[in-house]
Image 1 (spheres, rainbow, N blue to C red):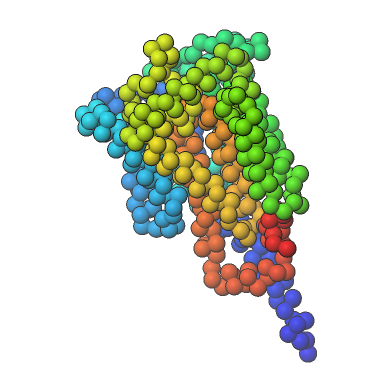
Image 2: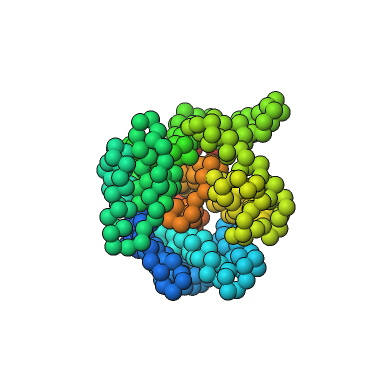
Length: 456
């Protein structure tokens, strides 16, 4: 008769394939077509008016789904309410309250409503419609497909200076204005279907790490997708978009090179902080000014961004709590009103509390996902891809302001990883016990994907 000791591995072996499948890919669910619809509508360059309210196709989707998503969130059907949800809700409501307080009900209500719809709406949309690894990969593939469709138009624009999509829709509907900027590297900058070339580049850069790490099988399709994304980003000839991809590439390389190093992400954070402190101590310029001077194409752009940072921070100090809303911010008369820094725009318009809430919501998603342990490998890959993407975008948004569709995409990506927090709760209790029993016998995602983070 077999002993218990000899019988247990055979029983565990029988349960192992189903457990692996369960934790690797999650319960299969049908991805909503609304995810694909929203992603492709983000690239529509036209808008229209209902009364005095300007609406875009993607705004119609967000307006139509806001209440159902809100009900699903409050009822707990998309997982329990978490700190990240609360911070995002507070950031949206604080910004809306500032706009109402600064401009009054008559003038500020429309802006406040749009701000809530474009901030909390896409976050909740992703919370409801992206609930597992299947839906997440479906979202990644839709985003890569959109960029692949835009690539031929962008290349044509590089050589001719003609944004075909804007001109095509402009024959029938109001569209974004065509920007006229000096060529770079002998090429016209591709604007694509967005309001500015840099917005086009930043939107495309958001799919680089996602396609490289989370596209799914076959893996070569993900590599091909990241190549298409990189080529489309290049067509924008925008330093902010280049910076986003560069940060993502460096983080992917660091992840591969230091796979066997303990505390590798803490080491990387220490290197970044140490570099910041060294520049701050030994340079006669602030770290931001040094950072900007090396990451722009020309000296004029660099100098103007430094001035924007100086006068923008002074404006924040003059209006630290309630900001300036949409009124004119404090600056010399000869300076343009645009601020090429999303985080500074938030602080200027909504005060330091608005900036703190938005930054805390952003960072809580990144750090919260990063602290999760014992995730299945495929889920961990999605988590890693999203965190790297958000890091690249966060750095790029220090050099560019995002609004309209690109802003909605950022908020959508923040919500697209919230399902990972609830992932273990969807594994049935019996399977969870089986998984616990076999964890010592099979490699988990921490052994395969993050071996250096495992305790000795």
